[in-house]
Amino acid sequence: MFEYFLIVSILMGLITGSFTNVMIYRIPEKKSLWYPPSACGNCGTGIKWYDNIPVLSYLILKGKCRNCGSGISIQYPLVELLCGILYAVMYLVFGLNLDLLFMAVISIILVAISMIDIKTMTIPNGLVIALFITGILYSGTRLLFPDMFSQTMMWFEPLIGFFAASLLLLLVAVLSKGGMGGGDIKLMAAAGIFLGWKGVLLALVSGSLLGAVISIILIIAGKKGRKDMIPFGPFLCVGIMFAALFATTVLDWYIGLFTR
Image 1 (spheres, rainbow, N blue to C red):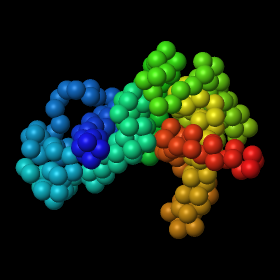
Image 2 (image 1 turned 180 degrees about the vertical axis):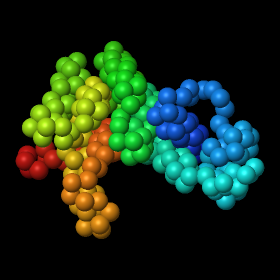
Image 3 (image 1 turned 120 degrees about the vertical axis):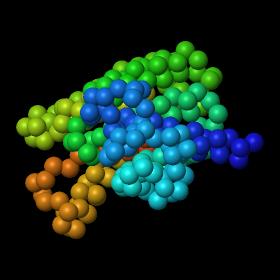
Image 4 (image 1 turned 60 degrees about the horizontal axis):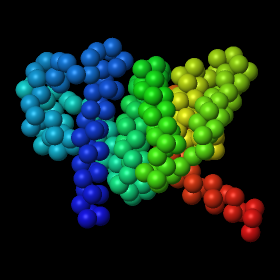
């Protein structure tokens, strides 16, 4: 049964990843997520269901439109694969419970935010609001029905979490005179609701460290200059996912270093 549910989780992630690609493309364009159906961006031909199978259709078509032969961005199968991997990891961490359901929704929002921020250097308010609402539902349900979740939290943790990292980023934005975007601040406020103050601070630290390392690598490689803007949202999203999955393990390990 374990292998069966693992495979189902991966398949659900691949399918959800296909919808995530729709969000990534249409939200910045302010287009409906539901209509019209998917079509080739070059010739406008509607994409048939058999050409819209996650990853597999891209491989069969060799990354080209069946009708006009124009190239299809590698982003599409990569996002689908990423979501498939995330769903598999979430199943391994949480098992079959409501944590998995809520984190499935949160994960696709974070993937969409990351890709849109990379492309446009902005974090859409609509996605932050979606994360905020999902976080409230997640934390509220955990408080009311703790036995249905693998991880619980105290009633005050979402409130403190809302301010814990976002106020720090707001201070950075003020001191740097705009060096930190408002979208990043709102993103961490929303994440703090379901991560709690410990989790959101871990997300901020891990995301910032990852961002610093990647930025240094890009500068050394000559891909970015020291004054070039680098989107911070994707690193924060990685930190949020890391904290959501492993905060308890990491924090227990860290506390153990001082209690031995």
